[in-house]
Image 1 (cartoon, rainbow, N blue to C red):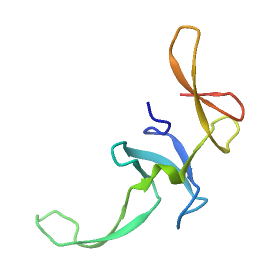
Image 2 (cartoon, helix red, strand yellow):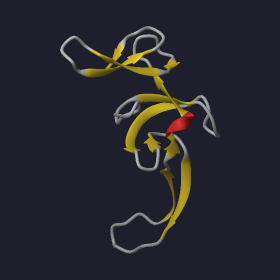
Image 3 (spheres, one colour):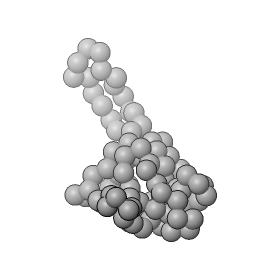
Length: 104
């Protein structure tokens, strides 16, 4: 079970986009990378291979290392570290280390 999942709100802690926050679009656990909406844009040069395809230079989100991200707690609205706890019924959940709030 990974600490950062799809649809989580994260903030960038290191790199050229430091301080920006966004929503996780995709996670690649084998590579320890994630794609964040609106973060880490790169330019891609595309040529026409179909009639209806967009051509030219486009901006596209690129994966960023998970080590450079901090998960934003929904209760305290700050980047926080995550711990795993077990509920009374035995299910494993993610909780914020600052405020002990359960993160879905």
